Image 1 (tube, rainbow, N blue to C red):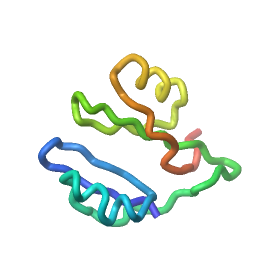
Image 2: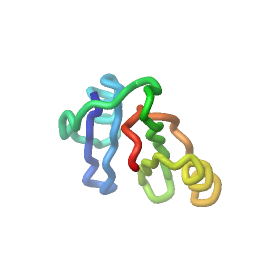
Image 3: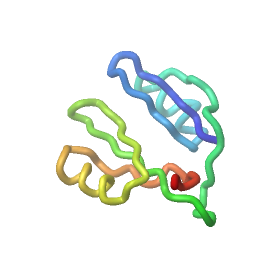
Image 4: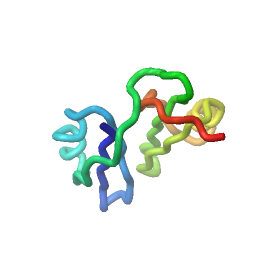
Length: 93
């Protein structure tokens, strides 16, 4: 499962496959549960690509990308910290 949360104070969505993070961890940080968004793979399966998650504490923003270059460049150049792979989704094109 892929869960979605919303923090109205910092205007940020948080997506996670971790139920503990969804159920209690993020709530302590001001996020409200929005429910189950859908399902993604937790391991790399043929035809899928990683969905990377980054966090920028200066602008209070999560960034999600399937582009490895953007994942590295975003972290290095724009103040984002790498948070790893959220899961694996079907590749586009």
